Image (cartoon, rainbow, N blue to C red; front, side):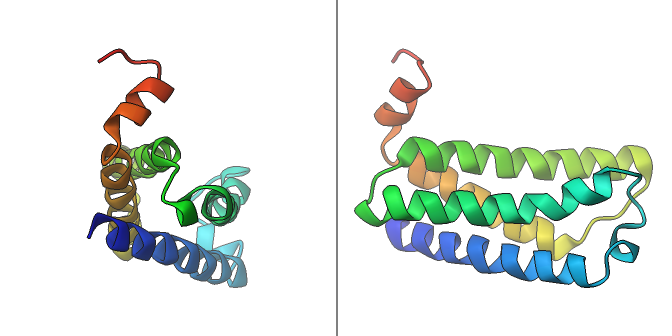
Length: 130
C-alpha cells in the first residue's frame, strides 16, 4: 500500500512540476512579479530540479524498491519549502498558490513515509545511531 502511494506521488511530483514550470514560464516575469530580482529565476529552476531528481531516483532506486534515504531527504526538503512559504506569507504578506502547497505536502509526506518504511537504512545513511 505504501509503495503504491509512493509511486503515485512520484508521478504527481513529476507531472505537477512540469505543469508548474510551464505555467510559470509562459507568464514569466509577470507571473513572479511578487518576487524581487534573481529570486524570479530561482523560482523557475526549482520545478526542473524536482523533475531531474525524481527522474534519476526513479531510474536508479525507486523502480527496484530501494532509495529509502533519498526519498526521505527529498520529502524533508519539500516540506521545508512549505514551511518557508508559510513563513514568507506571514512576514512578507505574499500569498502562494494553495494547490501547489497541498501537492508539495502530499508528495513530501509520501516520500517521508516511504523512507521510514526502512527506517534503519535512513538512520544509518544519516549517520544517526539507533
